[in-house]
Length: 242
Image (tube, rainbow, N blue to C red; front, side, top):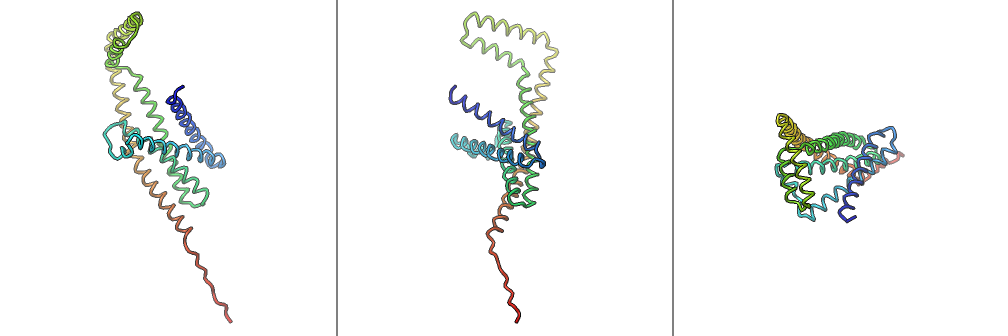
């Protein structure tokens, strides 16, 4: 197995580890606090790893500030939506830790807000992946034509090429014979594609402001805690009455 395959397998395992921690957090809730905290720390560590990996990858590829130069594309929105969900996971984990260590209600409130919006983001991520899979399973006439061209251009043996071309011709013939149903397939593909684009764009525009405000609240509460810790202690001495 080459290095690239090992990296892909590692990322998949970490992805499912993060998903497992997330499910464990929601199933445990406040009733099983020790398990909830363990899974929360796991989310904190794994999400931090993914964020650092993404930033390092962008630095290496010279695309660190690509997020600041948006192109109107679903790929750009989807990529940054995943990044936002990771940041939300990180902030949720960190606020949970600080809520546990400091006991302040403000940390607890922020933790609950971030947890709920992260749940929305994760469920949307799952729905988008299912829609994307469905979209790619719907074959179009253009894709059929491209398949035929790929068969002709590929270095198959004559026997293999003839067999594949024969199979391709049968599929194309079946497609043409059912031309009355083709509009349904095209309509389904278009509907899924448009829905996918609308959902990604809406989620990006909805979740981004919430995460930015939450990050600002996180910084303000943390600053307030640090200010209280470093505040000078004054001792009032009352002189004794003679």
